[in-house]
Amino acid sequence: MAKEIPDLVAEARAGTGKGAARQARREGKVPGIVYGDGKEPQPIQIEFNSLLTKLRAGRFMSTLWNLKVEGQDDVRVVCRGVQRDVVKDLPTHIDFMRLHRNTRVNLFIHVNFENHDAAPGLKRGGTLVVVRPEVELVVTASDIPEQITVDLTGKQIGDTIHINDVVLPAGVKPTIDRNFVIANIAAPSGLRSADNEEAAAVEGEATEA
Image 1 (cartoon, rainbow, N blue to C red):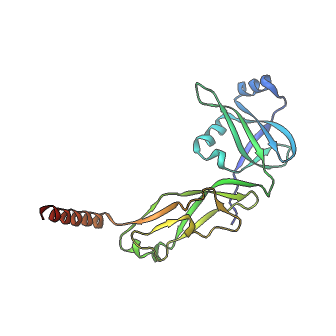
Image 2: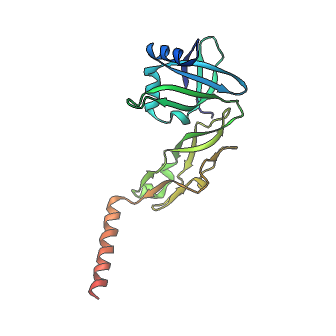
């Protein structure tokens, strides 16, 4: 299933240059520009509070947005730069790049874990420790997966799940070459305590000997 692309509402900006940008800021807007895909750059402006909320939510620059400007066709964009006030650290200008449907882009995709009931390690009281709830992947703009799925069937206490253990959708690959960890099955706290006590006892016996 393709991932739903969130909307980003903007307005067309009549002028360019510092004067027009200052006017946009006085009106509570953040000026910006949309470029790429062989088309003319489009000056825009976005309502300040709405943009700030999205920036603070995280992953803004790795999210594919559906840019909506009244009177124009929707266009898919990614943020390629946010200029900020050096004192207040608030956005003062923003740049977006248009994406063609076949464009490859890096995005963070949610990791879904299934078949918990089929994992012996979890049945024994183990805990699923999620190291990466999202994974950065290289995807095609027209076919972004909603999520990637990790099958926990047969997983035992002490097992570690790496990215190479996950079947990725066709044409999708991680941005990192190494086989990084996504999650592991940790022993229950009681079992860990017992193991630690046993290890300490063995160590003590060895010291006395």
